[in-house]
Image (cartoon, rainbow, N blue to C red; front, top):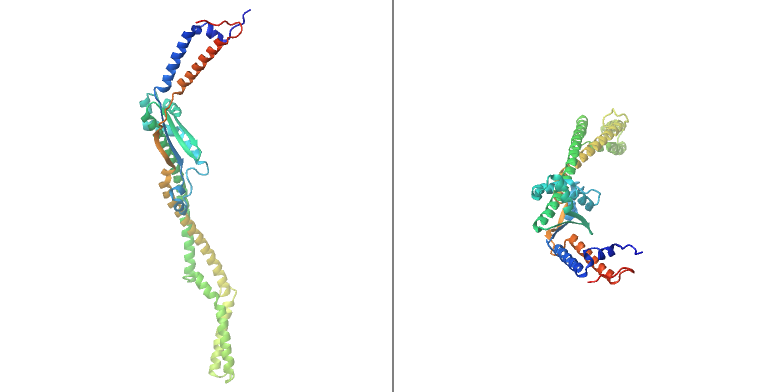
Length: 364
């Protein structure tokens, strides 16, 4: 019983390919056709490269840091991944479709068909070193370059829009904080001014410091007067006019010293009064300093948002503008079919040279 033939045996014995020269001619013609289709129509490879940028590379890091504008559109995420995600987003493809008029230009029924075509027609991929490449293969070199350039511009525009949205949100929050800081500053400033008016201290800290040293000054003056009194008593009695004057001065100074040493805060310019007023003025000055610092910082950050707006358009840096690769581009599908046919032809020739046992050789 003859065993059934395999696929190769069937092709070589029971089809038009059973005749050697006819088979070789068919394969030769098909291989030549697919070879021509591999080369023609010619395809062009358009590409460009860009990389995410940061304020430091623009020389603005110190200026941005001074104004508190240190955030960027990339945040703490990998910048390359953000650019790739934005570049592959439907919003960016819609911008490219509208910019190039692809629906009318390519004859699509609607934007959805154009979006599906564009997603396959243009490729974004990352290279080593944080470089992003945009590529397109088309039969029209100018159109391929337009696709690449439009996608790059749309990606940069979208990234800038995202950055401006972040800045606008930050500006809204800062304006609210500045309004609250203004109210707080006004309240603390009013309280501080009222304290100055109530105590008649133009500079409360200096005035309180002077009052605080008054006790030591009075003690020093009293000791000096006592020395003068002891010296005068060596030459005169207490009924002497000079001695009586010194005694009166010492008595008056002692009364002033007693008042200054008083711990009762109701006694003006006393130790108790100085303690209460110094505590109050320190608290008022602390609140006023905090309110001013918050207000100034919020205003500085608000100024920084203007600097951020100026730098949003430079979120990516173009390394190579759109160009056409000079290397010859081959049509892959015809090339693969050509290789497949060549392999099949060789396999059939080898099969006929050494056919399986029981399978006769086909003559010319």
